[in-house]
Each structure stands twice: as C-alpha cells, then as structure tokens.
Image (tube, rainbow, N blue to C red):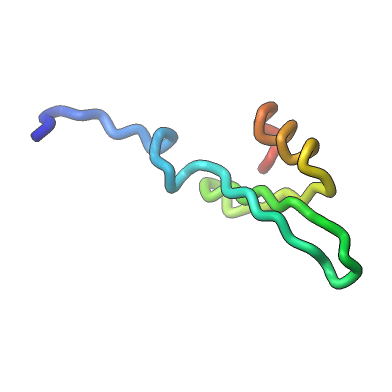
Length: 60
C-alpha cells in the first residue's frame, strides 16, 4: 500500500494522445490524433506529420 502518493493525470495512459490510421472513401490514408484532455482530434495526411505533431505537441 502506498500512502500519500501524488497522482498526476498526465502520467496516466488514459490521458495520452491516441493515434488512429484510417482510409477515406477515395483510398487516401489519414492519421487522426485524438487528445482525450481536450476531446479534440487533429487530422494529418502522413505518418511523418503525425509524428511531428506528437513530438512538438501541436495536436489540440
């Protein structure tokens, strides 16, 4: 049992961005980055862009 443990929500997996790869009706690949803290999703057209968003923290 841990006593006086400080819980930081930013270290909880539930608060980490979620990345989804999908195809639209034309066959184009899209990467959606969902931020569970804000409820917003950023959509980019390449894996490289998705990686940059995650590294720079520019997803919403």
